Length: 349
Ligand SMILES: Nc1ncnc2c1ncn2[C@@H]1O[C@H](COP(=O)(O)OP(=O)(O)OP(=O)(O)O)[C@@H](O)[C@H]1O
Ligand SMILES: [Mg+2]
Image (cartoon, rainbow, N blue to C red; front, side):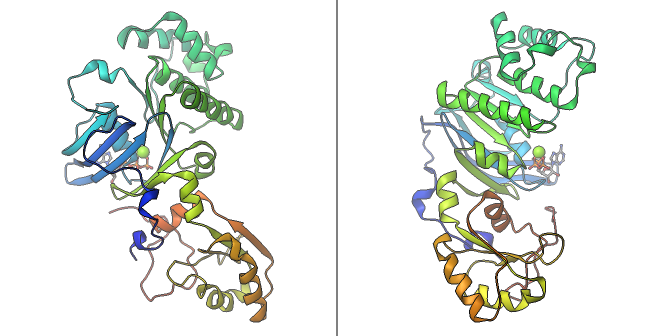
């Protein structure tokens, strides 16, 4: 199955794809390739991040997100391809340009015996010139003012993560790269992060690229989404357009009716995969790839076949788009072709 062919979007749903540097893009990568020895991590990544937006960077484990973000920080060099930042080609010697980029990639490391504020002070001394008042400001952004003077070794995982976000914002960067920043954050921390990033983009006009496995969180936060797998972008565009174009209806039947229901439901979207959950507490739920407005038609067809829906939910969500594109699901019910599906949680080889 070629996931790209399952639900083609009109061309205008995509971000501009020119090779010329585009000033309204904070980041544009073209044909970005990266290998670690024989392991290929990026296979020609074309990513377009509009300025002033939150870009949700999504992909299964090992798909290349961290690698792409590391390349954008300048810590790692690509084997091929180009990066432009704020409309200008990225060179690996331009340190002042690097100062415009703040990042939190994987677990932040701090001096355990120093306090949060002292750690930020050390960072500000070694990085771009930073106003001392900025330290208090970023600690406040992430809700850590109250613990600023405690040593890091007394911090919880989520507190360290909050401090990591504060550290990424320290130099007042124009572009913030956050790799799984929600890791360890409690619900209050998530709300605080969301509000800070919204302020950062909508009020200050800055740009955020955030990778996350929490699709619901990304759905609430991102303006634009890029979905990557096997080192290349499968889809990119405004979240709203993506959700609208990938409308779906979720319908639940009794587990014993699933085979019969699958035959009825497949007629509605013969070209898109039909997802069904055949075990666990979600057993009986199907996701049908059709416009939400056709929910009543589905119900009628099921009744016609003597099946009564126990639940019907029109809508669309990022999770089903993600699963459809990446093919990462272990619960495809009765696939329309004999072609075997990928194993559950399949990792790239
Ligand atoms: N230092 C490294 N040496 C060798 N291979 C690596 C290295 N770092 C990453 N890889 C490989 O590159 C590919 C992409 O990895 P990457 O960490 O960028 O994925 P990811 O999308 O961030 O995954 P995750 O969601 O698990 O964080 C994987 O196949 C991974 O095994
Ligand atoms: Mg990663």
